[in-house]
Length: 125
Figure 1 (tube, rainbow, N blue to C red):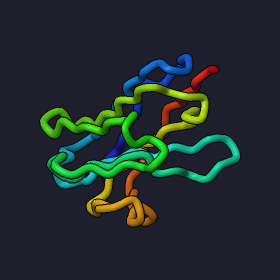
Figure 2: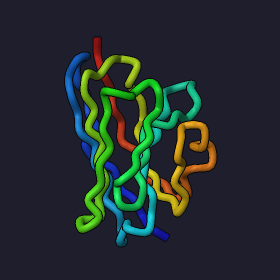
Figure 3: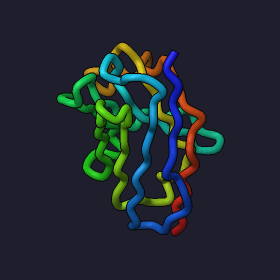
């Protein structure tokens, strides 16, 4: 099974930007890729997903217009560019891979077959 490793997390201030990366152990062209996050005491929240070629993307409502997901299949990586960060974005961010792509946010409940260990993002006010 594919193994995923996130990087790029850290401590930033409100309004700053941060870019997360996820490196896969094998070719990702057969996988839809995405990001979820989980804050302390909260349920896991869908952030973004990209289809196998990157042609289609879907975002969670709380990050639309601020976050951008992208992928580089030749490098087996997927990235999440996060702009205008707020303290509410503080969470552990997880990369995921799946053969299934959620076409809409409603479909994200069953998205996420393989997972990384997560990377912490902390946004101070």
